[in-house]
Length: 390
Image (tube, rainbow, N blue to C red; front, side, top):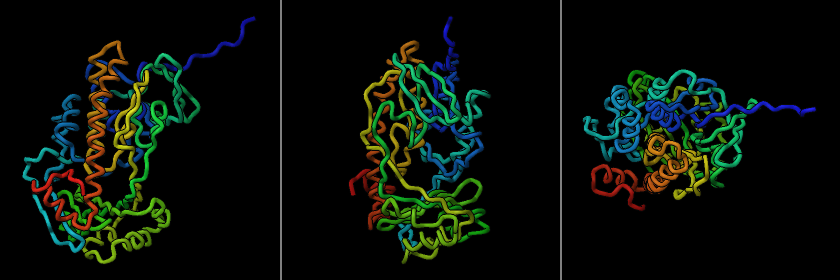
Protein backbone atom coordinates (compact mmCIF):
# COMPACT_ATOMS: atom_id res chain seq x y z
CA UNK A 1 0.00 0.00 0.00
CA UNK A 2 1.16 3.53 -0.62
CA UNK A 3 0.89 6.29 1.94
CA UNK A 4 -1.24 9.41 1.56
CA UNK A 5 -0.05 11.97 -0.93
CA UNK A 6 0.41 15.59 -0.01
CA UNK A 7 -0.48 18.39 -2.37
CA UNK A 8 2.49 20.69 -2.92
CA UNK A 9 2.06 24.27 -1.76
CA UNK A 10 1.58 27.00 -4.36
CA UNK A 11 4.97 28.32 -5.45
CA UNK A 12 6.04 31.81 -6.57
CA UNK A 13 9.50 32.47 -7.98
CA UNK A 14 9.43 35.87 -6.24
CA UNK A 15 7.09 37.01 -3.46
CA UNK A 16 6.91 40.62 -2.28
CA UNK A 17 5.21 41.08 1.09
CA UNK A 18 3.59 44.49 1.26
CA UNK A 19 1.97 46.73 -1.37
CA UNK A 20 3.27 50.00 0.02
CA UNK A 21 5.36 52.39 -2.02
CA UNK A 22 8.52 50.27 -1.89
CA UNK A 23 6.90 46.98 -2.79
CA UNK A 24 4.98 48.61 -5.62
CA UNK A 25 8.09 50.35 -6.99
CA UNK A 26 9.88 46.99 -7.05
CA UNK A 27 6.96 45.30 -8.79
CA UNK A 28 6.55 48.13 -11.31
CA UNK A 29 10.21 48.33 -12.39
CA UNK A 30 10.30 44.55 -12.81
CA UNK A 31 7.00 44.51 -14.72
CA UNK A 32 8.22 47.26 -17.04
CA UNK A 33 11.01 44.85 -18.01
CA UNK A 34 8.78 41.82 -18.47
CA UNK A 35 9.22 40.24 -15.03
CA UNK A 36 6.24 39.60 -12.74
CA UNK A 37 6.53 39.29 -8.98
CA UNK A 38 3.64 38.16 -6.79
CA UNK A 39 2.72 40.90 -4.29
CA UNK A 40 0.82 40.12 -1.07
CA UNK A 41 -0.87 42.74 1.10
CA UNK A 42 -2.91 42.42 4.27
CA UNK A 43 -5.49 45.05 3.26
CA UNK A 44 -8.64 43.60 1.70
CA UNK A 45 -8.48 46.15 -1.12
CA UNK A 46 -6.47 49.21 -2.20
CA UNK A 47 -9.23 51.45 -0.78
CA UNK A 48 -9.34 49.79 2.64
CA UNK A 49 -7.31 52.49 4.39
CA UNK A 50 -6.79 56.17 3.76
CA UNK A 51 -3.13 56.69 2.93
CA UNK A 52 -3.02 60.21 4.31
CA UNK A 53 -0.39 62.90 4.36
CA UNK A 54 1.73 64.75 1.85
CA UNK A 55 5.14 63.53 0.72
CA UNK A 56 8.01 65.60 -0.64
CA UNK A 57 9.63 63.44 -3.29
CA UNK A 58 13.37 64.02 -3.58
CA UNK A 59 15.06 64.27 -6.95
CA UNK A 60 17.92 61.86 -6.18
CA UNK A 61 15.85 59.10 -4.53
CA UNK A 62 12.07 59.06 -4.91
CA UNK A 63 12.04 60.80 -8.29
CA UNK A 64 14.91 58.63 -9.51
CA UNK A 65 12.83 55.56 -8.64
CA UNK A 66 9.86 56.96 -10.55
CA UNK A 67 12.09 57.56 -13.57
CA UNK A 68 13.22 53.94 -13.41
CA UNK A 69 9.56 52.93 -13.24
CA UNK A 70 8.66 55.02 -16.30
CA UNK A 71 6.27 57.10 -14.21
CA UNK A 72 8.08 60.39 -13.67
CA UNK A 73 6.04 62.45 -16.12
CA UNK A 74 2.81 61.05 -14.71
CA UNK A 75 4.07 61.90 -11.23
CA UNK A 76 4.81 65.50 -12.17
CA UNK A 77 1.26 65.83 -13.49
CA UNK A 78 -0.08 64.94 -10.03
CA UNK A 79 2.12 67.05 -7.77
CA UNK A 80 0.59 69.67 -5.49
CA UNK A 81 1.37 73.03 -7.06
CA UNK A 82 2.57 75.44 -4.38
CA UNK A 83 3.15 72.63 -1.90
CA UNK A 84 6.83 73.41 -1.38
CA UNK A 85 5.99 76.65 0.43
CA UNK A 86 7.38 76.63 3.97
CA UNK A 87 6.74 78.62 7.14
CA UNK A 88 8.58 78.47 10.48
CA UNK A 89 6.92 79.93 13.59
CA UNK A 90 7.67 79.94 17.29
CA UNK A 91 5.21 79.10 20.07
CA UNK A 92 3.95 82.69 20.04
CA UNK A 93 3.07 82.41 16.31
CA UNK A 94 5.85 84.82 15.40
CA UNK A 95 7.11 84.10 11.89
CA UNK A 96 10.82 83.28 11.65
CA UNK A 97 10.87 82.05 8.04
CA UNK A 98 8.43 82.16 5.17
CA UNK A 99 9.20 81.01 1.66
CA UNK A 100 6.77 80.70 -1.22
CA UNK A 101 6.90 77.86 -3.71
CA UNK A 102 8.42 79.42 -6.82
CA UNK A 103 8.55 76.14 -8.72
CA UNK A 104 12.33 75.78 -8.54
CA UNK A 105 12.55 73.40 -5.58
CA UNK A 106 13.66 69.81 -6.06
CA UNK A 107 11.15 68.23 -3.70
CA UNK A 108 7.65 68.50 -5.16
CA UNK A 109 4.78 67.49 -2.89
CA UNK A 110 2.24 64.80 -3.67
CA UNK A 111 -0.51 63.16 -1.66
CA UNK A 112 0.61 59.69 -0.54
CA UNK A 113 -2.63 58.17 -1.77
CA UNK A 114 -2.17 59.76 -5.19
CA UNK A 115 1.35 58.39 -5.47
CA UNK A 116 0.27 54.92 -4.43
CA UNK A 117 -2.61 55.05 -6.91
CA UNK A 118 -0.17 55.98 -9.67
CA UNK A 119 1.91 52.90 -8.92
CA UNK A 120 -1.12 50.63 -8.58
CA UNK A 121 -2.55 51.79 -11.90
CA UNK A 122 0.73 50.86 -13.61
CA UNK A 123 0.43 47.19 -12.63
CA UNK A 124 -1.82 44.52 -14.16
CA UNK A 125 -4.97 43.24 -12.50
CA UNK A 126 -4.31 40.25 -10.28
CA UNK A 127 -0.62 40.86 -9.65
CA UNK A 128 -1.41 42.00 -6.11
CA UNK A 129 -3.08 39.49 -3.79
CA UNK A 130 -5.26 41.59 -1.47
CA UNK A 131 -6.42 40.32 1.92
CA UNK A 132 -3.28 38.20 2.28
CA UNK A 133 -1.98 38.88 5.77
CA UNK A 134 1.36 37.18 6.41
CA UNK A 135 1.68 35.65 9.87
CA UNK A 136 5.10 34.07 9.53
CA UNK A 137 7.86 32.78 7.30
CA UNK A 138 10.50 30.10 7.63
CA UNK A 139 13.56 29.04 5.69
CA UNK A 140 13.42 25.73 3.83
CA UNK A 141 17.05 25.68 2.75
CA UNK A 142 18.80 26.60 -0.50
CA UNK A 143 17.31 30.10 -0.31
CA UNK A 144 13.70 28.91 -0.47
CA UNK A 145 11.09 30.01 2.08
CA UNK A 146 7.61 29.05 3.17
CA UNK A 147 5.21 31.88 3.99
CA UNK A 148 2.03 31.36 6.01
CA UNK A 149 -1.07 33.53 5.82
CA UNK A 150 -3.74 34.39 8.38
CA UNK A 151 -6.34 32.30 6.53
CA UNK A 152 -4.28 29.16 7.17
CA UNK A 153 -2.89 28.84 3.66
CA UNK A 154 0.78 28.94 2.74
CA UNK A 155 3.06 29.19 -0.27
CA UNK A 156 6.72 28.77 -1.08
CA UNK A 157 9.05 31.13 -2.89
CA UNK A 158 12.59 31.22 -4.23
CA UNK A 159 13.01 34.91 -3.41
CA UNK A 160 11.23 36.60 -0.51
CA UNK A 161 11.15 40.39 -0.15
CA UNK A 162 9.92 41.95 3.07
CA UNK A 163 8.34 45.27 2.13
CA UNK A 164 5.91 44.96 5.02
CA UNK A 165 6.72 47.97 7.12
CA UNK A 166 7.74 48.72 10.68
CA UNK A 167 6.49 45.47 12.22
CA UNK A 168 7.67 43.25 9.40
CA UNK A 169 6.94 39.53 9.59
CA UNK A 170 9.86 38.89 7.26
CA UNK A 171 12.53 40.80 9.23
CA UNK A 172 13.06 38.02 11.85
CA UNK A 173 14.49 35.84 9.07
CA UNK A 174 17.51 38.13 8.83
CA UNK A 175 17.64 40.26 12.00
CA UNK A 176 16.69 40.28 15.68
CA UNK A 177 16.23 44.06 15.65
CA UNK A 178 12.85 45.50 16.63
CA UNK A 179 11.72 49.14 16.43
CA UNK A 180 12.19 51.19 19.61
CA UNK A 181 10.15 54.16 20.77
CA UNK A 182 12.01 57.39 20.00
CA UNK A 183 10.54 59.46 22.82
CA UNK A 184 8.26 61.37 20.47
CA UNK A 185 4.49 60.95 20.03
CA UNK A 186 2.24 62.53 17.43
CA UNK A 187 -1.45 63.27 17.47
CA UNK A 188 -2.91 63.81 14.00
CA UNK A 189 -5.75 66.23 13.28
CA UNK A 190 -7.58 67.31 10.12
CA UNK A 191 -9.24 70.63 9.35
CA UNK A 192 -11.47 70.35 6.30
CA UNK A 193 -12.19 73.06 3.68
CA UNK A 194 -9.80 75.25 5.61
CA UNK A 195 -10.08 78.42 3.55
CA UNK A 196 -13.82 78.67 4.25
CA UNK A 197 -14.25 76.76 7.53
CA UNK A 198 -10.94 77.62 9.22
CA UNK A 199 -9.56 80.74 7.50
CA UNK A 200 -7.24 81.72 10.37
CA UNK A 201 -5.68 78.26 10.49
CA UNK A 202 -5.39 78.26 6.70
CA UNK A 203 -3.43 81.50 6.88
CA UNK A 204 -1.21 80.20 9.68
CA UNK A 205 -0.26 77.07 7.73
CA UNK A 206 0.09 78.82 4.39
CA UNK A 207 0.27 77.08 1.05
CA UNK A 208 2.56 74.23 2.00
CA UNK A 209 4.33 73.12 5.18
CA UNK A 210 4.23 74.69 8.64
CA UNK A 211 6.74 74.16 11.46
CA UNK A 212 5.60 75.78 14.73
CA UNK A 213 8.26 74.79 17.24
CA UNK A 214 9.18 75.02 20.90
CA UNK A 215 11.02 73.06 23.56
CA UNK A 216 9.87 69.44 23.36
CA UNK A 217 6.71 70.41 21.48
CA UNK A 218 5.59 71.43 18.05
CA UNK A 219 2.86 71.63 15.46
CA UNK A 220 3.79 70.29 12.05
CA UNK A 221 1.13 70.83 9.40
CA UNK A 222 0.65 70.89 5.66
CA UNK A 223 -2.01 71.97 3.23
CA UNK A 224 -3.41 69.18 1.08
CA UNK A 225 -4.55 69.58 -2.55
CA UNK A 226 -8.23 69.41 -1.54
CA UNK A 227 -7.81 72.48 0.68
CA UNK A 228 -7.77 70.61 3.98
CA UNK A 229 -5.03 70.92 6.61
CA UNK A 230 -3.33 67.85 8.05
CA UNK A 231 -1.75 68.55 11.43
CA UNK A 232 0.67 66.66 13.66
CA UNK A 233 0.87 67.78 17.28
CA UNK A 234 4.29 66.51 18.34
CA UNK A 235 5.11 65.91 22.00
CA UNK A 236 8.23 64.54 23.65
CA UNK A 237 6.65 62.19 26.18
CA UNK A 238 6.97 58.78 27.81
CA UNK A 239 5.76 55.91 25.66
CA UNK A 240 2.68 55.42 27.84
CA UNK A 241 1.50 59.05 27.56
CA UNK A 242 -1.01 58.33 24.80
CA UNK A 243 -2.51 55.47 26.81
CA UNK A 244 -3.95 58.05 29.20
CA UNK A 245 -5.92 59.85 26.48
CA UNK A 246 -9.39 58.64 25.45
CA UNK A 247 -9.37 59.16 21.69
CA UNK A 248 -12.99 58.02 21.38
CA UNK A 249 -13.87 61.40 22.96
CA UNK A 250 -12.58 63.90 20.40
CA UNK A 251 -13.19 66.99 22.51
CA UNK A 252 -11.68 65.42 25.61
CA UNK A 253 -8.72 64.13 23.63
CA UNK A 254 -8.10 67.58 22.20
CA UNK A 255 -8.15 69.07 25.71
CA UNK A 256 -5.66 66.44 26.90
CA UNK A 257 -3.30 67.12 24.01
CA UNK A 258 -3.56 70.88 24.37
CA UNK A 259 -2.58 70.68 28.04
CA UNK A 260 0.86 69.96 26.61
CA UNK A 261 0.71 73.29 24.78
CA UNK A 262 -0.21 75.62 27.64
CA UNK A 263 1.05 79.10 26.85
CA UNK A 264 1.13 78.54 23.10
CA UNK A 265 -0.64 81.05 20.85
CA UNK A 266 -4.37 80.45 20.40
CA UNK A 267 -4.00 80.35 16.60
CA UNK A 268 -1.63 77.39 16.94
CA UNK A 269 -3.74 75.59 19.54
CA UNK A 270 -6.70 75.91 17.16
CA UNK A 271 -4.97 73.47 14.79
CA UNK A 272 -6.03 70.74 17.22
CA UNK A 273 -8.93 72.38 19.03
CA UNK A 274 -10.89 72.90 15.79
CA UNK A 275 -10.26 69.45 14.27
CA UNK A 276 -13.15 68.19 12.15
CA UNK A 277 -12.32 64.48 12.43
CA UNK A 278 -11.33 62.22 15.35
CA UNK A 279 -7.75 62.66 16.50
CA UNK A 280 -5.32 59.85 15.71
CA UNK A 281 -2.46 58.94 18.07
CA UNK A 282 0.93 57.84 16.70
CA UNK A 283 4.03 56.75 18.56
CA UNK A 284 7.23 57.31 16.61
CA UNK A 285 9.49 54.26 16.49
CA UNK A 286 12.80 53.63 14.77
CA UNK A 287 15.28 50.86 14.12
CA UNK A 288 18.95 51.46 14.97
CA UNK A 289 20.50 53.84 12.45
CA UNK A 290 23.17 51.26 11.63
CA UNK A 291 20.73 48.38 11.18
CA UNK A 292 21.99 45.77 8.75
CA UNK A 293 22.14 42.00 8.51
CA UNK A 294 24.42 39.34 7.04
CA UNK A 295 23.66 38.19 3.52
CA UNK A 296 20.90 35.64 4.00
CA UNK A 297 20.08 33.42 1.02
CA UNK A 298 16.81 34.08 -0.75
CA UNK A 299 15.51 36.96 1.36
CA UNK A 300 15.93 40.70 1.82
CA UNK A 301 14.07 43.76 3.13
CA UNK A 302 13.25 47.21 1.84
CA UNK A 303 11.67 50.40 3.13
CA UNK A 304 10.57 50.59 6.76
CA UNK A 305 11.09 46.85 7.18
CA UNK A 306 14.79 47.46 6.57
CA UNK A 307 15.39 50.89 8.08
CA UNK A 308 12.44 52.38 9.96
CA UNK A 309 13.37 55.90 11.02
CA UNK A 310 11.74 58.99 12.44
CA UNK A 311 10.02 61.22 9.86
CA UNK A 312 12.00 64.38 10.48
CA UNK A 313 14.22 64.26 7.41
CA UNK A 314 11.36 63.32 5.09
CA UNK A 315 13.28 60.28 3.86
CA UNK A 316 11.05 57.29 4.62
CA UNK A 317 8.90 57.21 1.48
CA UNK A 318 11.81 58.29 -0.71
CA UNK A 319 14.01 55.49 0.55
CA UNK A 320 11.25 52.92 0.12
CA UNK A 321 10.84 53.99 -3.51
CA UNK A 322 14.54 53.92 -4.34
CA UNK A 323 15.01 50.64 -2.44
CA UNK A 324 12.34 49.05 -4.63
CA UNK A 325 13.80 50.45 -7.84
CA UNK A 326 17.37 49.52 -6.89
CA UNK A 327 16.41 45.97 -5.95
CA UNK A 328 14.57 45.55 -9.24
CA UNK A 329 17.53 46.90 -11.22
CA UNK A 330 19.93 44.61 -9.35
CA UNK A 331 17.76 41.58 -10.14
CA UNK A 332 17.57 42.58 -13.79
CA UNK A 333 21.34 43.09 -13.91
CA UNK A 334 22.03 39.61 -12.47
CA UNK A 335 19.57 37.30 -14.25
CA UNK A 336 19.65 33.81 -12.81
CA UNK A 337 21.85 34.87 -9.89
CA UNK A 338 19.60 36.24 -7.14
CA UNK A 339 22.33 36.09 -4.51
CA UNK A 340 24.56 38.39 -6.53
CA UNK A 341 21.57 40.70 -7.02
CA UNK A 342 20.66 40.79 -3.34
CA UNK A 343 24.27 41.39 -2.35
CA UNK A 344 24.60 44.28 -4.80
CA UNK A 345 21.32 45.79 -3.61
CA UNK A 346 22.16 45.58 0.09
CA UNK A 347 25.66 46.96 -0.45
CA UNK A 348 24.06 50.07 -1.92
CA UNK A 349 21.09 50.27 0.44
CA UNK A 350 22.81 49.88 3.85
CA UNK A 351 25.03 53.00 3.81
CA UNK A 352 22.34 55.16 2.23
CA UNK A 353 19.80 54.13 4.86
CA UNK A 354 22.28 54.56 7.71
CA UNK A 355 23.13 58.08 6.59
CA UNK A 356 19.47 59.07 6.28
CA UNK A 357 18.53 57.52 9.63
CA UNK A 358 21.31 59.42 11.37
CA UNK A 359 20.27 62.67 9.69
CA UNK A 360 16.66 62.06 10.66
CA UNK A 361 17.54 61.52 14.32
CA UNK A 362 19.70 64.66 14.35
CA UNK A 363 16.96 66.68 12.69
CA UNK A 364 14.40 65.37 15.17
CA UNK A 365 16.55 66.43 18.09
CA UNK A 366 17.08 69.87 16.61
CA UNK A 367 13.40 70.52 15.87
CA UNK A 368 12.39 70.38 19.53
CA UNK A 369 15.16 72.46 21.08
CA UNK A 370 14.16 75.79 22.68
CA UNK A 371 15.81 77.69 19.82
CA UNK A 372 14.43 75.43 17.08
CA UNK A 373 12.67 78.21 15.11
CA UNK A 374 15.90 80.16 14.83
CA UNK A 375 17.96 77.12 13.94
CA UNK A 376 15.53 75.76 11.36
CA UNK A 377 15.21 79.19 9.75
CA UNK A 378 18.99 79.41 9.57
CA UNK A 379 19.09 75.99 7.95
CA UNK A 380 16.49 76.93 5.34
CA UNK A 381 18.35 80.17 4.69
CA UNK A 382 21.60 78.31 4.08
CA UNK A 383 23.27 79.77 7.15
CA UNK A 384 23.57 76.49 9.07
CA UNK A 385 24.12 72.87 7.99
CA UNK A 386 20.90 71.00 8.46
CA UNK A 387 22.52 67.97 10.13
CA UNK A 388 24.50 69.93 12.71
CA UNK A 389 24.28 68.32 16.12
CA UNK A 390 22.08 70.23 18.60
